[in-house]
Image 1 (cartoon, helix red, strand yellow):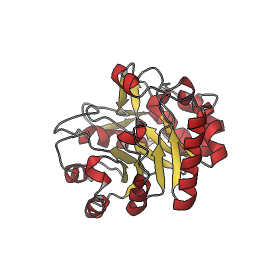
Image 2 (spheres, one colour):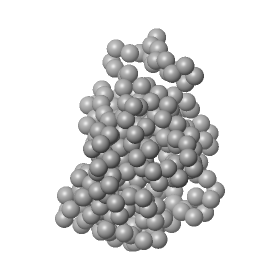
Image 3 (tube, rainbow, N blue to C red):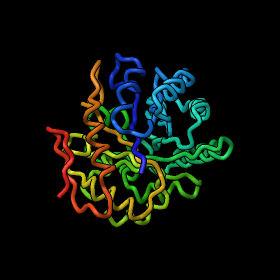
Image 4 (cartoon, rainbow, N blue to C red):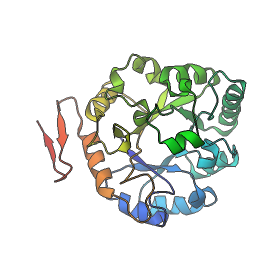
Length: 277
């Protein structure tokens, strides 16, 4: 099972993209998801060169921040995705709109048309529960129904769209045990994998409340064939110069260690030593 990692402009903000690619090549990740931003929106060829140089394929992209906020749709971003040679593109539902709203339905219809003519598979991500920062909730508020994984799935599948499941946004320890899990499982093509602890979000898999071992074990048992993407803030969502490659390495170690013969895996975050018991 391949493990990828999400990268973007904000962590770290003042480092070049090559710093990230160079550091990530020794963490055990198999590829990257590129959250499109100012650094990458107009330079896909540069990112392709970095991908080849450091043997880290770009396997998926995430829509830009300005599109997530509803400020500008940015249809050209899908052309960037094609130039990067990816198959999967993650988008958010529109902010401030219910899933039943006419504008939301028109939005899904527009995405479906782009998907049909581009050959991309567009995935819609479930939105966070009430654990969002006050600033984010003020700037990009989401209606309650877009936080429901089951409701979101039911609204997007008639358009041929599929899902990115964000485990931090679900905000329960065992998403694999939720009543909706088996229903939505066939439509999940990307999993944004991270843990949480109270209001602390997008934590490494070795900390927090998420049963990452149980989830990955269940995905293997169900022969999950989509992407797994670590969406881990390292050490937080916005940094100037620092990126904690060690927490990515430890998260990868926990995820890839899971097998049907391993009943419990414990990773020491201090020593970085993988133990089984």
